[in-house]
Image 1: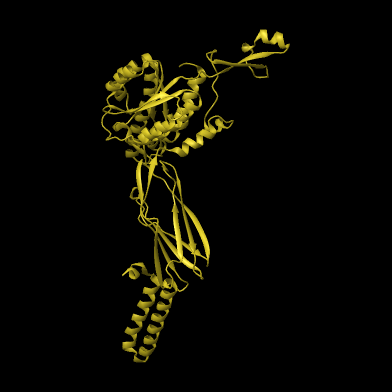
Image 2: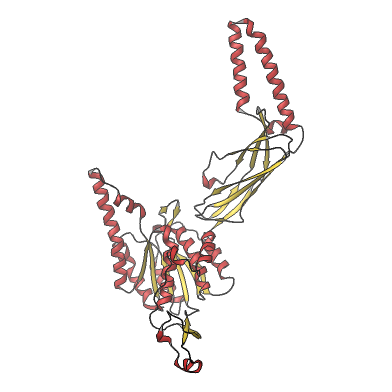
Amino acid sequence: MQFFKRLYLNNLFFYVLMGIMAGFVFAYFFPSLYKVVWLLLFIFLAVTAIDILLLFATKQQVKASRNIPEKLSNGDENDILIKISNQYSFTVFAKIIDEIPFQFQLRNFEIKRTIAANSKDKFHYHLRPTERGEYFFGKLNVYIASPLRLVARRFTFANNQMVPTYPSYVQLRKYDLMAFSNHLFNYGLKKIRRIGHTMEFEQIKEYVQGDDIRTLNWKATSKRNQLMVNQFQDEKSQTVYMLIDKGRVMKMPFNGLSLLDYSINASLVLANVILKKGDKAGMFSFSKKVENRVLAERRQSQMNLILENLYNIKTDFFESDYSRLYVDIKKNINHRSLILLYTNFETVDGLHRQLPYLKGIAKNHLLVVVFFNNTELNELIHKKATTIQDIYDQTIAEKFAFEKRLIVNELRKYGIYSVLTQPENLTLDTINKYLEIKARGIL
């Protein structure tokens, strides 16, 4: 029974068999072909038996393995490595069918390779998850055929592997290397002119061209008989909280990823930048109630704590309760902090319903509201209109786009900062806003 479970008949086997059956039909009308067709049938069965013996003469002639990361990065291309070794004394033709987690909905995934005798091969493929959680890989099925290619032998490896999908740690590594290098400008991170001297004193150094002459230290200059300036550094140990709205407004998908997951990925990267800048990073999420709370600290385990809480954010996308959010912030955040609120407003009326609570938060904290441009509307606006319906659709789309700009102006009236961004630019734009606030010393 186990033998038949491992035996697989290739398409070539059925094509040849159908040809022989057709020969028997023709032999009915041309009896002289009858013996020839029987001879071909016996040859075919003999060759098939030889093919089976070549493949099944030994127990294990092929080994394969699937190497997957300890965790997948949500929204990014994750590399999966397949290794396979051929211990047969002849070249084999391999068809690899990996049982990929159902979340990817890949029903026809297969890879075909030709592997020389007594050699090894490896290849990669990539998966892009669009939701956090546990992903289960099934069996790694390898079908091996000899040069005759009539039948194949099935090998099974790497049965039932589970891998969790976390917020985008690929972006975390990317910006960890870039955040303080000289190449930030190319990625959208820019230097901001400092206003005043609200920075912490760091050291006295020799003047070089480009230093601010207002920072000249005249006492040190007279002692060294050369120009000396005071050097300042950004104030440290400031408190920064990331608030993630997990209500229904964050359910909208872009490129397969919801606004909620875009916000989670950006929060992870921003938390790393905050801690590297010497500030305290904290976060929590809210919908009908406030959850996933991480108090702002600078301890070594802070990033792992934030990562685990971001991974565990779950929601049914209920209507968000901003009144409860306001009460919770007033009760638990007692000193002035920078609060980045990830949410989304589509209309000015939607903003006005929550504006009293946002104004209340902004009285005691520096509030930055991060919300999203609808990129699909932008495509519709710039699309050439050919019918009256197209013109009507473009007019409605322009109205919604204009409402987004009105929301920015409305927030500015009440001293509330805002970041209006496209989902794919969210991480860069929020880091830029944080660095701008740090550079201007307005916290």
